[in-house]
Length: 470
Image (cartoon, rainbow, N blue to C red; front, side):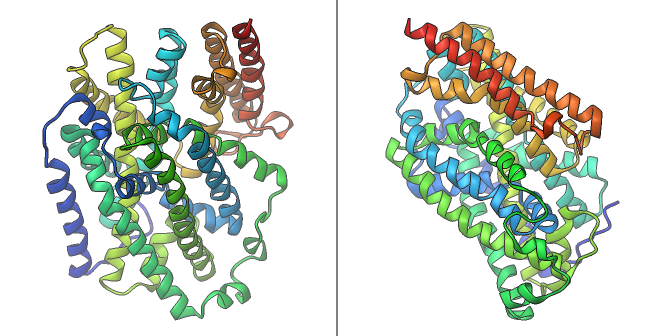
């Protein structure tokens, strides 16, 4: 049983009920359904909607952010904020227009691989994307929040959270997801603005954080207790931004290439503002509640300590909103990978009419995988670290090559680089786990799995580029 329990009044419960009612009403509202509507909203996202859906779904690790700040302070922003801004901008500049400007039948990364490389490479990319896009970390946070609210055990809480998160997208697809994301975007900012404002007014502003002895001095530096090698590792992990299926899907769904590029740049500004709010909230949690044993509980515990009725309900909704947005988004992406990139491509169908039904089957498998991973690795930060390290080596260079002919390898070398890159990273991970355990692996030479994986993948892909030019 989770030791933190929410103590809400009728007004707080009413806010939660209104939010959940909105999900049901808007999520289930349905217009015409073509395959393009179901998968990428008919490529109709305007700039405000594009920004709202990208910001809400990319910030689903809200309890993970609290966990990170609680244990590492400002180093959490330096490692899990700054690198992602950098690579998001690089995605906007070098990839966004090309992703949106591709052929009309391309919806996913495996679609692009099938066009540029071959069917085998596309199927392997689909396998990687299915696991890589798993919403395990988000369903873990959804279950944790339901534990706090209702006192349930984690497994049934995750099952209920998953069912409620994906039921409307099962019916309406990406269109339903995007409609709901707009409200979720607003609620996440409203909740954390309220929390930050109350903490600053009640405890004396940033001067309190600078002077209090309960906030370790290392929490006030950008490195904390770590070194530059640790920070460099997180910059490597942030490479996952370039390979993230959510970025590719939303760029494909943008109304124009310009919307895709400009929308990411605006989203980065939104993430910077929201990171300021979440980091400040996390520092107050550590200063006011220095004896928590579970960092994921930093935000809920602080809410119980300082928030009045009404604001507390708003804050819980503000935490649920991005978590549920990401749960839905990445479950749907994994399901789309199964429906379109496995079943449809494996059956060699030319008619796309059955893809929505195949995707609905994928929703079931994606949900089961997510719950399994969440039970196996019950740490949000550990999941970020493990999945990024494993699959970026297999996907990064082929994606860059797919959108730039000068960096493009032959299909055979691309396939080899994907297999060997992920295989090397997996072997490195297993060695580290054997030495230190799943949650605290000790890697050879202290190198994270991504580094040897990328080196092996780059060597093979480089040979493929040379062969392609010949």
